[in-house]
Length: 243
Image: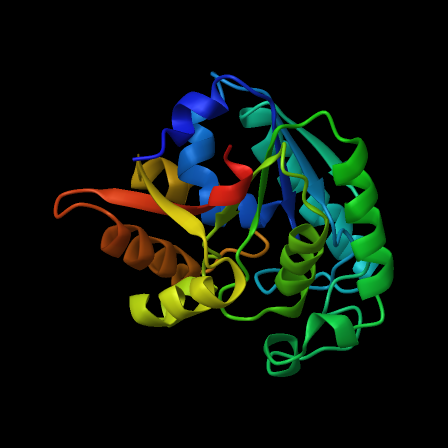
């Protein structure tokens, strides 16, 4: 088995995500287990948002501010150095729940700018390990980040893709395998045992967003990725970047 945790303890880590809550949802178990052993930084690519289903606040300025406060709590807990790009997310760009899951990333007007910025970041970055979304479920923001990294990643950088919660719970494991074979066919799967109670606690830090269905999705997916008596998160490492 590829020793992901040993690599994480040796090198600083950069997490590129559509939103910082994606880290808590999709790789929060790994972050909780490894934060004391490595240096973590993140880039929140789509920082301007109108998604906050649990509160009555309206407008991108107010909602984005609330979400930033949630990020500060999560990142502070795990000593994550966070950066924010003021790119509007899919809701601010006019997508609905259907179109945000059915649009090709290169057709989106923000694609050229985001792809260019990610290429520049990877080219000049000191980080040897890059985490990114696999874009399971096809959310356009997640696809943009994934595809930009696939186009621009450097061989010296270990590229690790996380399985996107809650979207991945809507797919069966065979469907996930097909997506992997399409976008990262040489990827090596690695499972990491997690403390599911800790992960759910951290997801709840995002009080404006996290619903019971999100918590259920995280449990369902971590259980089917885990052992009969445990829970795990699965990651996909590109073999040609692992050398």
